[in-house]
Image (cartoon, rainbow, N blue to C red; front, side, top):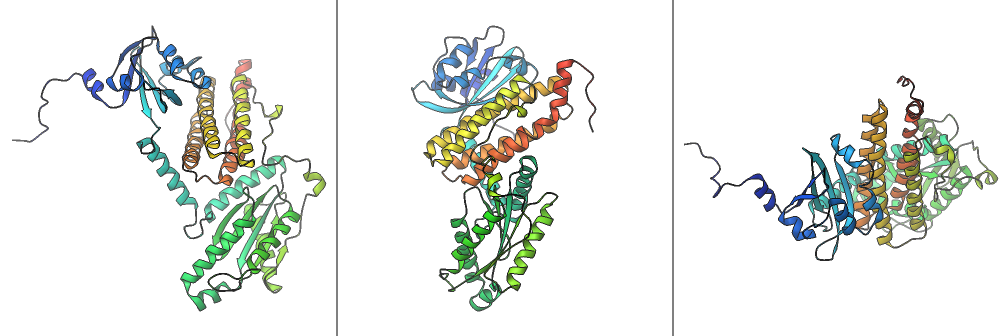
Length: 453
């Protein structure tokens, strides 16, 4: 006789099974907006609802933005098959405030609502976020020194060069190489050589700014990207780094020196040509006797011109950033406001709790913006809508990772600045979002859609 699952002690219908689940669930009649059914977990978490869903939603939230998120055409979006995912702080039946993810789907004239508590650190959702953040960190971080890997350095350089071409902000590159490092390995062994590499990395990091991007490029060679820094400023920093290395003996081996090559990114440079110019300067420094700094020729900036350029500690909104849709433009402005608030907290070394709360607020605003923008583009028939939505998902995952690191108190300032200035604002809001402007104009005139190249 074939074995199977033992029979249930008594027949159970679907409603009874849902009622026994530990996760809070509710069913709302779309026509009336009233609760049709809630399970026991919902009642335990929020009490028995006596009003319509939207009235109840307004009473359990203290954040006006969380209340406003279910205004407008959200029911129409749900009717089209989309799913709403909303993270917000909600008051429970016990009076405690919990951080809840609300998932809403439409089916057969009803809304199915699922409430996932993200408050506890041992919650599965939070553990998943932490795991993803850890995987991202491991894939981009050198396991020995804790600095960025070569791959991540090259990605960061692409972001910096994009910013240089778009806004004309100067950027310089330093290559540092430990002098006679092979002799260290031969004399003391590779384990001691690793200790030297770790201490070398720490001394570099101690002299650099939070916004500088430092990585181990290979072996004993390190690369530092210097945003908003012309050749002269990079040369000054490289000499500070040189002195930081040679002025104090290393714990494991005694005196150590390093040579430095520096180059400013010039018009027409590719990553490889820029890196090659810095590498040639490094080679010259070694040929000239080591323990020195050599700069590659060429600089397009002087101190007077730099005084009038934007700094990385603030993102400036300009009317030229508008794409022409009032909803998208208003939300872009809000993202700039929240990003600048974060940058201010970072610059003033504000409380970690305030930093984390603002990151969460930015996450909620970004989620709403992405949802609304995708709905607008879909209605316009934008042919790259799927690719744009994919870019949104990637940015959301990055922001989730930053939020998890912030909650754990392990968020690097440089990583936050890079995401705000480059990924979210420069590359997306002022980059990819410019691509659909022709479709917005066509939609306003009701003309024939443009062709896709």
